[in-house]
Image (cartoon, rainbow, N blue to C red; front, side, top):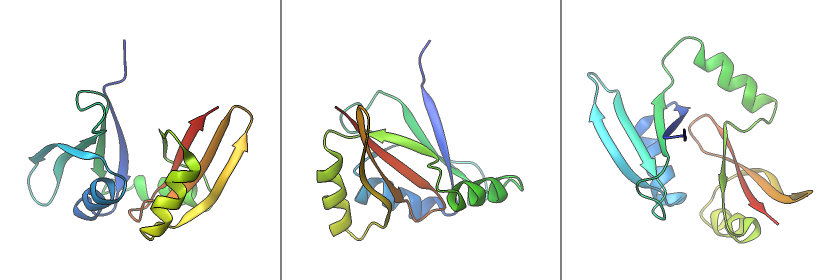
Length: 129
């Protein structure tokens, strides 16, 4: 068994696609219209194009806004991505205007930082020692 798909709820799929591809560096995998404005929109790591997909899921269900708002208010990331060097990625993304809610912090065997994805989520980046 392995993880094939995971998702984050986003308030604007087009804005999310731009952020996750143009800023974070993922690549679009699927973009299937679902009727209206909604799409089955996934991105993947360019290093693993057949790996786990991230679904940029519309946040239209009534339970989503209270859930995501509570996570952000409490500083809890919606998901985490592994990077080779958290500090280098923090610097690169900062130069692109990404707002971080947590600067690189060593936590035992990992270093983490937390960023705002501009679409309603906090995202943790992490590096193992």
